Image (cartoon, rainbow, N blue to C red; front, side):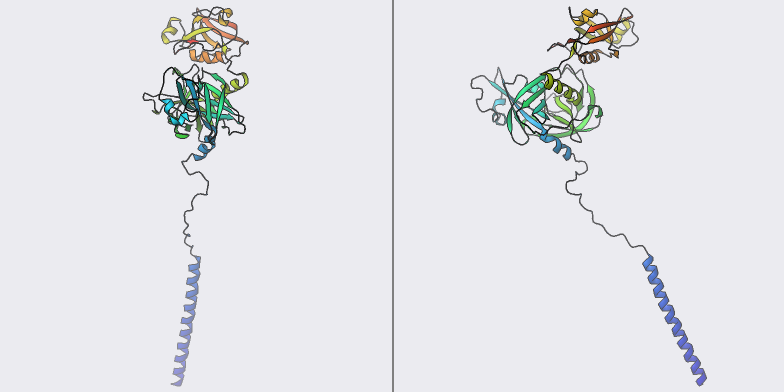
Length: 391
C-alpha cells in the first residue's frame, strides 16, 4: 500500500511539472507572436500649410508682385462742354476746385499705367493722356506726383510717361510668344476710380486684328473684367509677369461683358524702347494704298490663291512710285517674306528701317517682277481703315 501511494504521488508531481512547463512555454510563445504583429499606424493630425505658402488655386503671390508696379493716372483736359466728371471728389482732390485758374470747362478722367523702369518711366495708353493739360500719377504707396509725356504712338495706342522719382518698383516683363489660349491672367487697374483692383480670367484668343481700334493690331483677348479706368493697366500671367497692356473692351453698356483686349508685351516693349530712345516710333513707309485679295479678285487676276495685297493707289513722288510700282500690281513679298494680306503687308513694311533698300516682289500681268525701293519714314497720322491700308 505504501508503495502504491508513493507511485501515485510521483505521478501527480510529474503531471503538475509537465502542466507548469506547458503553461510557461505557451505564454512566452503567445507573447512572441504578439510582438511580431505590425503595429497599427499612428493617428496623425492634418497639419496646416506652412505660414506664407500660397494656397492651392490662389494667385495672391502674382498679384502681390505686380500690384506695386501699377499706378493710377488722373488727367485734366479742356472740354467744350461741362461733364459730371469734375464733380467726382475722387478726381478733384488731385487738382483742386479751380486748378486751371480760368473759367474754361475742365474734363477730368482717369486711367492706369505700369511702371516699366525704376527711374520713373511709366507705360500706358495714348488715349488715357491724349490732350491732357495736366497729369497726376498716384503710386500704390500713396504718393502722388506730376508726370510728363515722354512720347506717344497713337497707331498702337501706347504712351510713355516720366515722373521725377527713382528706385520705383518696376514690372517684370513676360514673353508674349509663350502666352497660350486658356492661360490664367490677371488684370490690374483702377476701374471707375474705386482704387487698385485685380480681376482674373483666361486668355480667350490671340492675334485679334481688324477691330478698327488701332492701326497696328495684334490683341490678346481676355475675359478678365476690364472696365473704364483699367485702360493702360497691366495684364499679368500667373507668375506676376507683364504679358499685355489693357487697352479696350467690347461693350454695349460701357461695362465689362467678358471681351477685353490687351496690347501684347512684345509690341508694347518695342514701342516703349523707341519712345524712350528716339522720342517716338520710327516706321517704314513706301507710299501706297492696298486692299486684300478676295477670291473674286484672285480669279480675275488668274491667281492660284487669294494671297498678297492689291496696290490700289500709289503716292505721286513716293518711294513706291520711284521704285516703279504701278496701281493694279499685286504685292506678294517684301524682302522675300511672303505677304498674306494687306494687314500683313502693313506690318512688314512698317518694320523696315527708313533709308534702307528693300525688295518688293510684285505680280503684273501674270509676270513676276522684283523692284528695289528706298524705304521712307511713315508720316504721323497716316490714314487707314478696315478695307484700305495707307502704307
